[in-house]
Length: 237
Image (tube, rainbow, N blue to C red; front, side, top):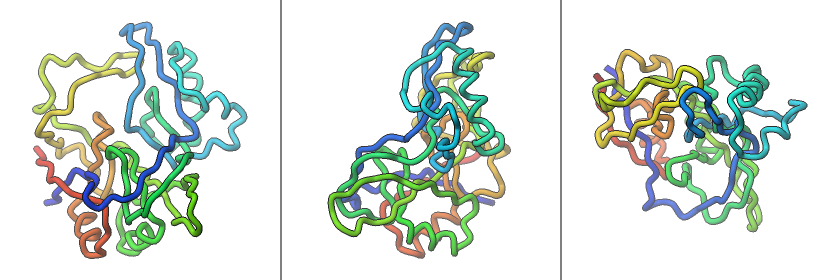
């Protein structure tokens, strides 16, 4: 039986930092059905390139839009996104652009979003046969000479939190915009039936700020002595 772990940064080993944002993103939304103005966090597709999209400038500024305009922009991006991509308001695309400093270990994250990995570490994990490993380029600027080549992991949303760990009074998602809010429980439980059988790393589909890896991924990282990560086991039901 596969064991799953929540991926967290190891602050004790982090000496690097970056101040950056993704090049493009879907706007937030004003929803006429639930009457809320909102945008999500955690839906990151760094390998999705909007460079050749004629309307790309419409994705460069964060702002809320009426639902009809949000939906129009979402459909422009959909052909460029992975099949069945979750494209909620606030979804981000393309490279991280900004400044970086310090010495980057194998993995670096600020607040567990996003995950930046050195290219040599990424290639070693590829050689281990890690399933679902995908990286997008970064555009991080260093002052020092010979900066490391860095990629951002693209962890796509799959699987769900188990209904038992979602408060019973949480309403269902909005039928139009999909909004549904609840706090992450102190002890998250994964819905075993919803988990992808062929991926070693992903985000939780209904709580995308939670990054999940399999025991196989964890053992590869430990065997290769890649720095910057800690693992906390998540129960399944």
